[in-house]
Length: 538
RNA sequence: CGGGACGUAGCGUAGUCUGGUUAGCGCGCCUGCUUUGGGAGCAGGAGGCCGUGAGUUCGAAUCUCACCGUCCCGACCA
Image 1 (cartoon, rainbow, N blue to C red):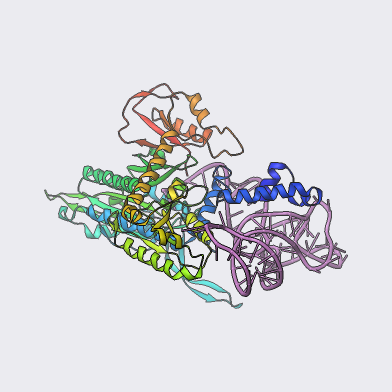
Image 2: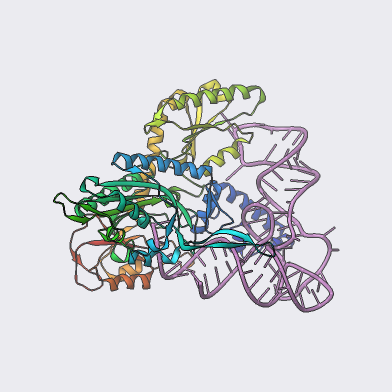
């Protein structure tokens, strides 16, 4: 929101009116403008307008933009650098658990998608369909689709059916199992309400697909991958997550069960950050994935699929960022240390730059989180303050400013992004020795802060009145900030789930793992096998 | 896809109700000078067919209609 608007809302008057009526108030007004601008880099703040704040953070950090194609974003270098780090870390974890990468087609024949009834129901509404193979100019010179395909092709919204088709060829004997495959790909889901990183028509993800000889083994696989995701979310994204299972209503179309990780954003809404599905024999029956067992009997395989997407970046943004912009956890930051030369005088410039380059080289020789420290010397010809704030908005974990006086004293001026960019001087060698500890401390602090926030806004609730109270906005002008995670006893009757959705716009996010203390359903008074987590969600 | 709000320079916006000089302003950008441990100051400058297309009118950023896009709410979803 522009300052003029804030001013007009706060004082009920407009700048233009002020100009002619009262120049003293105008002066006061611009004074506030200056203060407001210096207070934080992102406007509006989270408190003022959370969805708009999110957009502004993405823009200020130069992560991504909308494009001429509705719902499709361009991921810019800083954002893509984060994705590359996410991808590399996960890829390593998948390989460590025995999976191999492959690549399957972008296009899926319509008939394939049709094979699994529930699957079709789930995705039919959001498919991009290719019906023609070329363009021909009409009499006005306008290109028109021509060469209609015999069978339309669907741009993959997910790949179970096409991969199943290929798996059916590859699996013949129990000796071929387990088959453990992953692919890194783009998928398309024609979304009606796109939002950068959180919900776009095209997005990047990985999808793991496996076949097993028994249900038990397949179920174990989904559990294992859920824990890989949870481990990654907490240790890399510094994003605490609930591990749990989806209710039938929230399950993946075609799955027997869906496991998920759920995170709490700063507006206290839940974000589904990863899912892992036990598909039973639904897809192996639909696709013909059969194998001969030890006793020679032919059986259908038991399959799983699991995925995380660029949505994780949206989760990262909404977990850690503040009113000065993005905050990137050190493990994922494309640049972990930004070295900013301060060159007030021409005659010392060369020395300062040289010192910065030297520090950069030395830091790159160090290892943090099992990889070399990622350092960048920002020697662009920009004023110091301007340059510093750009890095704050990008969320770089550490800024190191070095000027002529530091050269004399052997000091550096270090800013920690997780402490709101608070800066302090320290000895150069001390910084050099502790950079690893600093980055680890930031990583830990971000997680601890997020975990404390999640805990603060998670509540055991045992009466319907209290539950409704919890999800009723205190201030109807900012309804998005209220509630949080409510842990309630529920008898698993679908009608109550529907009622929650209708009355409060909240859903059962998950049945947390290991939640087995019986209680009394707060709707029916019947018995409940354990608490479930209820929240508003993205 | 339903309801609402909104589209004016890279970003944020005034002007629209009540049609009428050359469409203002802030940030950013370019040039020069001055500054220099800090999101600089002064001076000058570039950048808009006012979302697109029709219509009403002597005249449209302003009124009417359609379309496109953005944001919010709903349905849907990683």
